[in-house]
Image: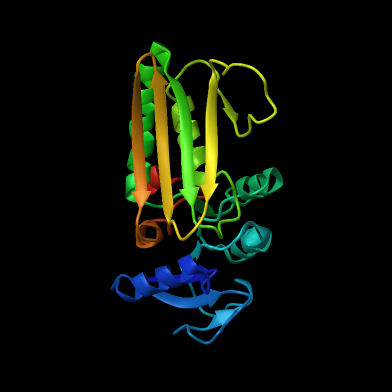
Length: 250
């Protein structure tokens, strides 16, 4: 039985993780961490991982970038493996993740779904063929109106997957509105849309001479992300310190 702490347990994703963990005989949520506890959780809720008195095997985080520094420090202090699903971290926070990974195992992913992690491989394979044939790569993503970071962590992961498909350096472009020039050859454009209750849509577009190829992933439910987090929680404990991704663990 894997004993788990949910960091951000009162948020939309934290609630889904708790619901699905209750259906999984291999996982037990022993505590949650959140600034707000409305009393709806079936487990004790604390203001920080450091304050948790329950013994745990892993921490699953779906919170926000503002909470990342304390989370990393607490997990290092308690030697707890961490599944870090929060996106939008700063460069300084990225360095703190690397430092913490020298002490504890950290699985970090901008998207926990099985489909997206397969998509990353498909995009790299497509890029290997299409970039050499003068196709231009573009990424379009859309999420619900409450998502605070743009572009999404998944869009950035997809851009990196495109870059892996070429030996030549490609630059990511997030804004063209002040530029008055034709599209550079070695560029990956990312556009972000926000509105409604859209869980997540990502399109990778390869536009070439007289033809366009699109690879799309649509998330209809947050359960796909929670499921990936639970699967990772079962295998990360016991791993050596370091930074892992979904492909290397699940």
